[in-house]
Image 1 (cartoon, rainbow, N blue to C red):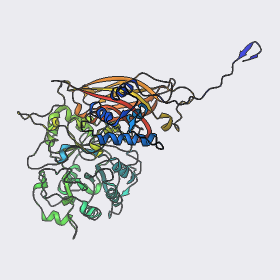
Image 2 (image 1 turned 45 degrees about the vertical axis):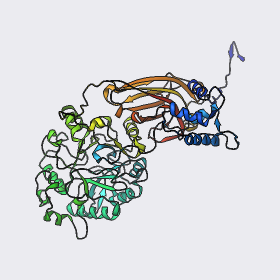
Image 3 (image 1 turned 60 degrees about the horizontal axis):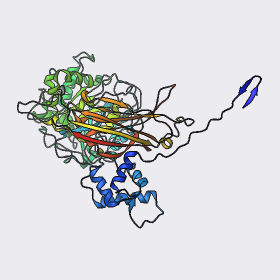
Image 4 (image 1 turned 30 degrees about the vertical axis):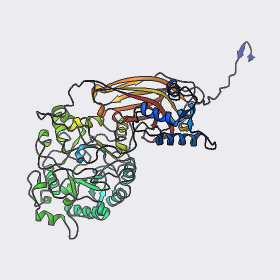
Length: 596
């Protein structure tokens, strides 16, 4: 303390806030004491009992418990030899906080994969080739590769002629996006298609090509994929094959040429208003002027649903160059829309199946007036939903509205980040992350009076989920470059909520905790669920900031139906959905069945 004139001066030096390791939560200590029989070590047999009785692993064996003990001892005491294999309290806590040894979700495919494709939600991208916004970003195979490595199963490519009309480019039509050659995208898909999953990759073409270039595409596709390419048995697809039948296969989905050219000739006589538009294209991908003339139409029969009208020699001659398969023969999932109003488009036909595409606003309109018809349509047919064309910044809509109506291909822009993509990532962490998630039975069931699930119906609570947030750790490691406040104790809080049907949607928040970089909240939340089958548990961590917006400090989204009960390690992800190296939470999940 010094003096300046009549005033005293106190000079304070800030002390950088260090990190200390928090011990096990009270619940962990209590369960350890219970299963260790009051001793200081938990034996292999005692751990096995814990796995069965607390963690719900009914089939856990002595070998499973022994493997865990050996792995924990190796990691924590790698240079120490033990005469008896057992875990101390600290070892037990280390095991519980290890994501690979104690995951919150199963990491393997466990659902029935032998049903038709229409029985599954499928991991689907929109404009998969764009690196950024919908107007001026580059087109590239890089985002396609990244998405496939994440587990994406449906890749969308917009096909356009080059300036000399002798080759095919992939780009977002009528925009400033720079193109990429189709052949480059196809080769990258071939190389990376099955890096994350053995189940089929579906390529949807948004086709703006002349018949000659369609034939060129058929040749490219055939030569690139060879035996990987799946061909339908006949022109008429009466039922889709299963993911199991299609392992390691590439599937093409687009409009058959006859229907495509019909739509183009019809579009030339229509207004270009967004209000009237209802096609696979968004508002930026309107028709190429080269394909709007009536004289471009095929000689094929132009009746509705011409896929099953039989072969037409004139059409085949137009589409098939010598030695190359016809473009239409590559199409395993035919896309098309019956003419007429929305109810007609959702009409279910007994002798054929197809893919229907609706923009998010068209789909929302359909759910308001024809919700049960949408559910009925998706029991046999495939419904694809895509973002409205005004989402020029590549933002997304809430995918849950699609899933609760049975839509299989809920297409999102994969190049950004945000809540919608977090929900998408969460849904497709199901079933081992293979990109195909079996739709719940209630979406496939047909009642005695031919009734189907009504998404608007008020339902009773079916299950109660109890979630306890114990603690979190790793911020001092994963966020060291992000300059969180190192000069005072950080205050973190966790938001924990449910995304699902409107009746189940809620978000809760823990109290703010400070003191060190390993946070202990020890708070429990209870969630009554009416439709637990499609509910997602959403978790976000934030650092409180008094003067500005709170800092983002990690997130995850987990499918409720796949949560493993007990005390589990939960990894956290950044805004783009990439997993942090060290950051995670210790949580407990408990389900209570409700008698209805």
